[in-house]
Image 1 (cartoon, rainbow, N blue to C red):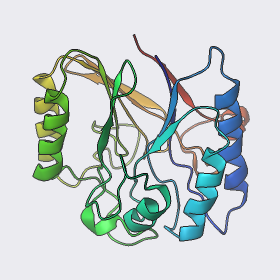
Image 2 (cartoon, helix red, strand yellow):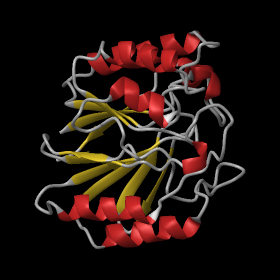
Image 3 (cartoon, rainbow, N blue to C red):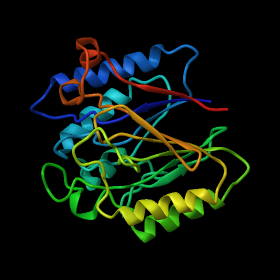
Length: 243
C-alpha cells in the first residue's frame, strides 16, 4: 500500500503563497508513479483557524486524484475544521476529538488527535504542545484491539519523541502521557509506523522497534533547520510504502 503524508500547510489569508505551496504538493502527489492509495494531512491545515482558510484547503485537497483524510494540529480550530470536513463517518459534527480509524485499505489507518484542549482555537490561543488524555488513549487502544490481523499506520500531529534538533525537544505538555502511549503500542505488534509533523523539520527515530517519522511543513516560508535553497522551495510530501 502506498500512502502520501502531508503536514503543516498553514493556510493563511495573509499568506497567499502558501496556497501555491499546498497546490504544488497536491500536484506532486498526483504525479507519483505508481500512484498512491490515499493522502493523510496531519494538521496545522490552517494557520489562524478561520473558516475561509479551511474552505481554501478543502478546494485544494479536492484536486487530488485519490481520497484524503485530515486531523487537527495546534494551529487548527477544531470546530471550523469539523464544520468544513465533516463527512458523517470519520469526522462528525459534535465530536469532542478528531480521532478515527480508516479500515478500507490493506493497512489500517489510525488518525490521532493530539491537540491540547486549550490550544485548538487557532492563532496564538492556548498551548502549542500536544496532549494524550486518558480518553484518547483508551480510544486508541480500542482501535488497535479491534483488528490484530492487519498492519496499522498511525498518524498524528505532534512528534511523540525527543526531537533533539530543536530548542524544546519535548513537544507534549505531559511527557508521562507519551510514555503511556509507547507502553500501549508495545502490546500491539501490528503497528508498522508512526507519522507526524509539527516540528517543521524532517526527523526520525525508532522506539520499541517502531519507526517514527516527522515531515517538514508544506509551507515553504516556515521550514526550519539548515536547508539548501532547493529544500526550502520544493514541494514536500512523504511517500510511505507499506506491505
